[in-house]
Picture 1 (cartoon, rainbow, N blue to C red):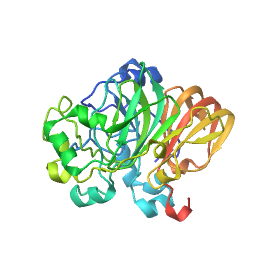
Picture 2: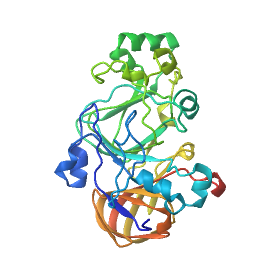
Picture 3: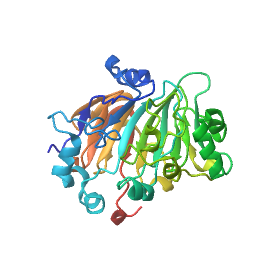
Length: 334
């Protein structure tokens, strides 16, 4: 394998909702206006698909297969000892050209019991752009919801009731939102995020009418009663999930709280000159400026996968980037 950082082109598997213009604008690539999600350094496929969603490396191999064939150089010995040949991370650029439906994702335990999966889908959103007068996300129920209510809303496809039950949050660039598995949520039109998540495509789409062409697809083949068992019906406080980091300027700004550490890590790098990065498997998204990572040229919109074997990589230039990493192996502490 190469032990150097690798630049990746857009990877936009077909989705059911509109978007993509913000991805194209960031990348400076009109062809990137092809879909609302760009799966960066992905070893994950769309639910039920064999290849759609996977990242292809410049040498023609799927990144998934390259990591499986030689996991230690890609991921590092401590990561492999804990997670095996599994990156334990999926990064996306997501541009909501319309409001997404109300949905949620299974936990690790639910995925293991019902979906033969190692991972559920806890995720986090790093807001990097907004458009329109009211860029809003919806996160967690405002009050405890009885099981009979959510079942009735889903059966009747009562979109208004579902959306009204959630906490609305107007967001701006620099905001980060942690979304634990099970917490219902929706992303509003005009919100552009870098999303970190566990590497699955498990979604329970509570609000499917007008979004999914197959009315049975919303429950992942589990049936309504079982699927609704993954929904967190408890009230959530926005302040427990939202962090506003926009005004912070430092060499490295931690974007997530400690509760996210078992799932992923993210920081915003402000580089003016030279900055050394410790060895780690990482995904880099350049938001502003230009420079180099070792000998690899970087510019606004660059997306890069960095293998652990790259060692202490050096960022040089004048740029702002989001660095996304898997959970820290427990053997290395917190």
